[in-house]
Image (cartoon, rainbow, N blue to C red; front, side, top):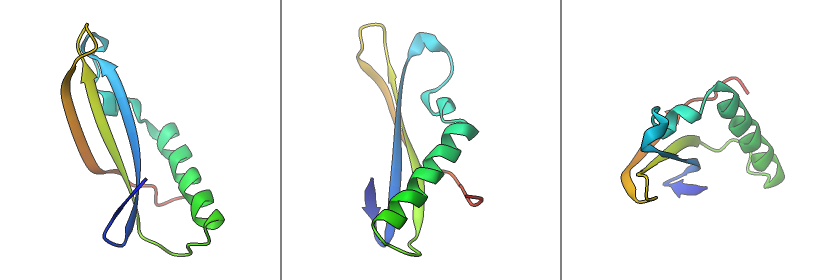
Length: 84
C-alpha cells in the first residue's frame, strides 16, 4: 500500500518471465481484482477509515531466463472495483 495525496493506493506486483508469453499485468484478472477490492474494503473497516479515495495500481515486472529484470511498468489505476 501507498499514499498518493489523499488517495490510498493498493499495489499488486506481478512478476513473470519473458518466455511465459503474456505480460505480467494480465495475471491480475477479474477474480484477483475482486479479491483485492474485498481486501481493501476489509482494511478500510479495520482501520476505521470510512470513505477514503482508493486506487488500484499494478507493477508489472518481466524477467529474462537469468532472472534479470528486462521490463518494469507501473500502471496507475490499472483497474476499478466499483461493485464491491
